[in-house]
Image (tube, rainbow, N blue to C red):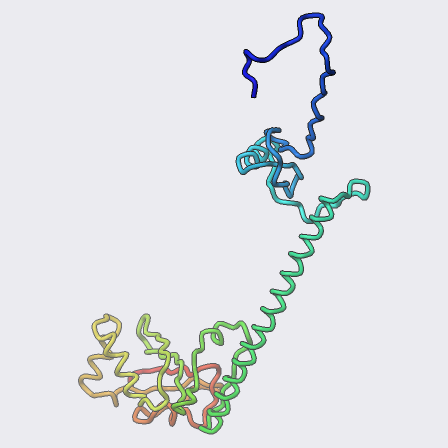
Length: 257
């Protein structure tokens, strides 16, 4: 490259020996519309403005108060429909396709889970019928049905009950034990919860009576359609529920004789 000392410039009024070549026209369509210095690399989905870098993208959002997200539902007049609009519609339809596909998979997955739950419920009811117990389920969405965790363990051949256990006359004396093995004696279940609450003020009467007279000073009743039936403290949960009709899960009330 020639240094300034070696360059020769025409004198004023002198006609150059060769005509000056005009600079090529600047192609603004290739330039960033924010800095107008570099070639653009990104096009804004919302306003279609061209940017060359992250800083220019951020600057254009500030200058134009632009969200940078395309309005997928905006109606575009036919006269304004161009290549950018075409690609916007194309990507929008792709998004819709993905959502539909994902929803279809979610529905199928939910159906599989629902069928599995219905299968388990059917097996539970079948096993209860063998034991002489009829189970009525609450409608879907009812809280008692949602919280019911009664299950049949296929490997063990046992039912694990979810129960409501109420101690009559005591404040806050209501419990919902879960996973109670059907072979558990009713007296053991009652004594377990009395022991847990022995220090509580509202269980002192129960504790004193049981210590003085034993568990036979208590009686337990099962709530079922038509009233309450007396249960046997010395029998298992399974035997106490034989020939009974249960609404969702057993509700047992313990009281002093």
